[in-house]
Length: 149
Image (cartoon, rainbow, N blue to C red; front, top):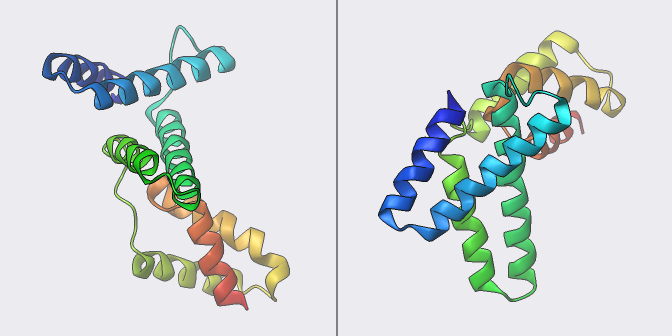
C-alpha cells in the first residue's frame, strides 16, 4: 500500500536527516489527507489508484513550476522543484516512451477511425483509459493531434 510506504519513507528520511525528502514526503501526506477529507473517506482512506493520480498531479505541478522558474531566471528554485519531482516520481509507475505511446495511439486510431480533429477528445479518452497513469495527458494530446493533422 502506497500510504504505508510513504509513512515508512518519512521515518527513513527523518533518521537520515534528509530535509528535502522529508519536506516533500510530508507534503504528499498532506495532499492525501486533504483529498481524503474532501472525498469523505477519512476513515477508509483513498485507493492506491487515487493516490497515484494525486501524486501524478503533484509531479506535474513541480515540472510546471520549474519551467516558470527557469523562464524567470531562478535556476536554484527550478532545481529544487525538479528534485521534489524526482522524489515524487519514485511512487509513480514507469512512464511509457513516446514510441510505446505511439503504438497505443495507432491501435486506438485503427479502432475508432476518426474523421478528423473533431474526434480528438474521443481518441485521447480511449488512449488515457488504456495507459492509465503511465503517460502524461498533455503528451497524449500532442501526439494524437499530430497524428490527426
